[in-house]
Figure 1 (tube, helix red, strand yellow):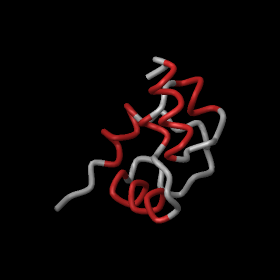
Figure 2 (cartoon, rainbow, N blue to C red; figure 1 turned 90 degrees about the vertical axis):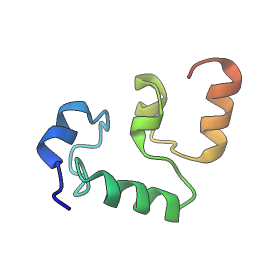
Figure 3 (cartoon, helix red, strand yellow; figure 1 turned 30 degrees about the vertical axis):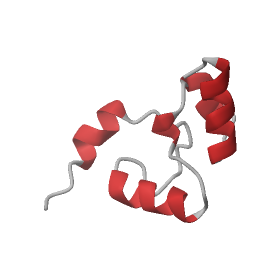
Figure 4 (cartoon, rainbow, N blue to C red; figure 1 turned 90 degrees about the horizontal axis):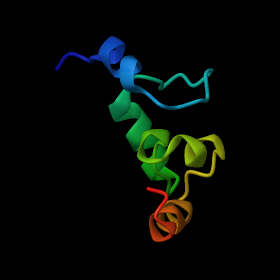
Length: 67
């Protein structure tokens, strides 16, 4: 399967610029799930900028209606 990195980068909301997985969604998701996290694209812009990618942070934001 061909990676669509260039297309993915057009929609990638991750603000961590030096990330080597940026635009390679399958690697990004696997990396974050291994650490019990979600990738930045699952969060609002404000939630993503906190760099707290934990499931708990995501649940709080959903509970607050921020997502």
